[in-house]
Amino acid sequence: MKINAVAQDANPLTLAAARAEFDADVTYLDTATFGLPPRPSWVALQQALAQWRAGTAEAVAYDLPLAAARSSYAHLVGVDPSVVAVGSQVSVPSTPSRAAGSASGRCLWIA
Image (tube, rainbow, N blue to C red; front, side, top):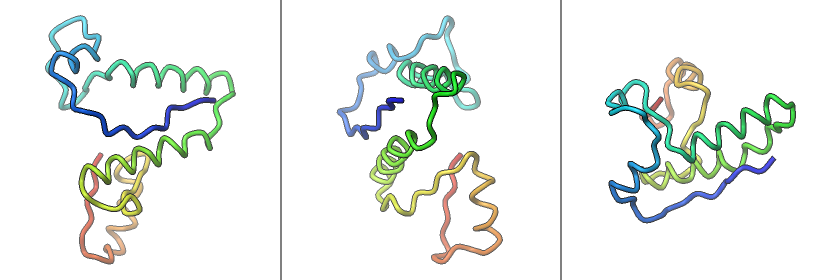
């Protein structure tokens, strides 16, 4: 299983290039609740689903892209990657920390 795990700090896309990443058949305005996936995300998802369905997916193969995503997000918001939590949904990792309180008194959970 090959997963692209490169964190990219590329130059920003132009508006035209960003628009070209989507395949909407109509003018689509519902991005706040149900945004369309850009083409690279759609392709990666289809590949992962095909491997999962065929029984060839390996959980460990997701470690590198997950680390790259954490690193990219940490860089974006100016924190160390070690403080970026990842979970299947925001309620899963946040419930224990809300019950115990965070050591620094600051937590930010983004879904």
